[in-house]
Image (cartoon, rainbow, N blue to C red; front, side, top):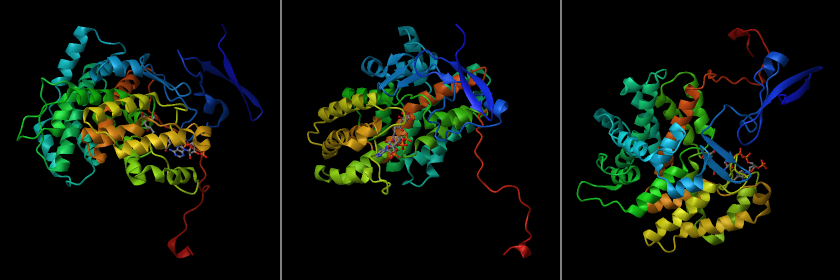
Length: 430
Ligand code: SDX
């Protein structure tokens, strides 16, 4: 069958561009020769219609509200799998056999400690520094310790760096939390699973034994699964762009953390909980709904809307179920935040503005309520998101590095500034 093409008529000339089909999802029009052929650029700020790469890792159908990791629906992975199994799947492309899984768990577990001198980094921060500021600094500094896994041309070093990132992020995140609250760091425990180890490093104190609650550990593990990867979102695109210059993986992940921090992206879980607290009670919801609709008011419903999902974010449904499980396990009967969140969701989903703009709750709408119930302060929510998303960033970085067509990312622009003009000496300026 002849290759399909897209025709462009421009400045009196006809141009044909090849159309490429993926395994599922929208086709792409390959415009990589457009500038050479027409002397013009495409223009797509925010990349709403731009595919930046080929990828086999994650697929989102925004209209259907589906999310697949290597073809497996998020609902099934969250129900039947554990986070390290999803990490293996994202990195290697297939679900692990029993042997592969126990080997992977063993390798990750035995990379969870950080270089002892990393402790000194924390003392340089103010105690009241935002934990995300600490994460940006300390994760970027990992490349100062692990020189034996920064050569991105060496597949072995790439895999070692990947394992180190996945394994050490929970430890660093827990250290950022402990430093923030003035408690001593807790070392990882090799006989605990990933989520249990993380909860213990965050909440254990030297004065007594810490018993991991298996229901809460399972909820934490599922929250990690829900946040693992999500196609070419802003922070993943940041990691890919940083990696395209050949920067080492630790520095690329630090760039991803910085981008995730923004309230329009990973910072939305912290912003959503702060918004629910500000609304405070069900009777104040209409006032905030009106503000969210007012073009002159910068207020937005945090945890609502999504660039890709124009239907319910499938992760939000699972998150809501997890919220009820955690509150139930903790005996929290009537959490006012949850009451406001559920009423806000109900009202918004029936409001013409939100229906017309296809604004649904996203993963960040319920996650904050759950994380607060688990004992985390609001300013740790995005840190937890970064712990989970590290595997997605690393898998996408690895895919980019191993792509034979990979080259440095360097977008162009529409220049709207001053045309060429001559320098004016100081004494001639008005
Ligand atoms: C994440 O990309 C990913 O995959 C991200 C993520 C991941 O896993 O990596 O899923 C994680 O970042 C989830 C999103 C978390 N952010 C928030 O909850 C913040 C609130 N949401 C918005 O800021 C917004 O919806 C975005 C940033 C999520 C999406 O922005 P877009 O795609 O650029 O959409 P837009 O801002 O152009 O909005 C379209 C319209 C606008 O109205 P008009 O200009 O067309 O009249 O919808 C309105 C917006 O004003 N709108 C909202 C709204 N979100 C969009 N109005 C009120 N409240 C909102 N939350």
